[in-house]
Image (cartoon, rainbow, N blue to C red; front, side, top):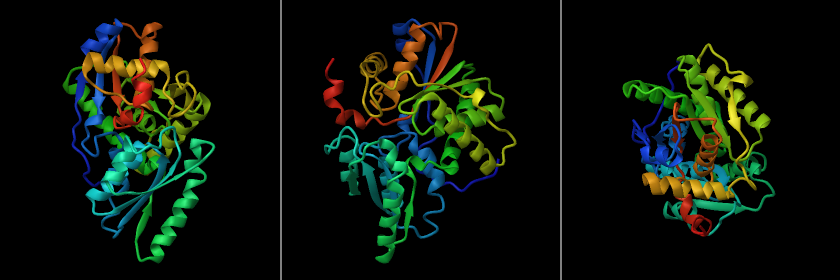
Length: 332
């Protein structure tokens, strides 16, 4: 693998925890969770895996300002703002208006980090990839005219370099499974930008680990999501010098659990958050991991996975958003 510069932003290695209470409640497979909610940067989350690579050259290049986009409760925006402060930089967030814009959850934490935040009305969350890049570049030009040296980071670090963070995570997870003498049949998580699935699928194929990687979509329909995973995986393979490629038939994902749309929790999502909290004292989030767990629960209940299987669930973080969704989460 081609070595890439990396800056330390989090605590590694993140543990694998077994969830016997949840397994017993579901009457299903043995379940483990990869606790990326414990990475340690701004209440944890998987986003720092990408930022460690994306920001590696920023400091030595004299970057003093970071700019990114996302939804108004973006987990990536929070971790980027936190990384900026940790590295002595100023965070600027150009966000699209999501379901919750009150100063709570991630928005409260942006405020505590003294981030400069703009929230813009849009018709579709995907505008963070169409409308927002131009607005971020305009802001960067304005800051340069003031003598600043900004770096614009695409929403979610949607680049092959960002995906490299999850290639590294795959190596970490495969070693942990080997150390614990655990053989999993499934690795599942909730995704929109699909870098997690791209990075894991790529690395696990390269090291020939027989693990079925399943993504639970929170926005994209299956065909579009599959294309994104394949493209991201293969672009990252070129970046890292891997002599492997991913094909569409190697990508497994479900788009059955999206509900009314991105950032809108379903009844099953809320039930899954409460179930995991009440059986394992682990909190999921209402945008990604809650829907991912709702998908896993349904796949167990419908017999896709049984007591003979062992499942690894990736907790990608985002717990701060629970506070913004207090009304939805406290309804039951």
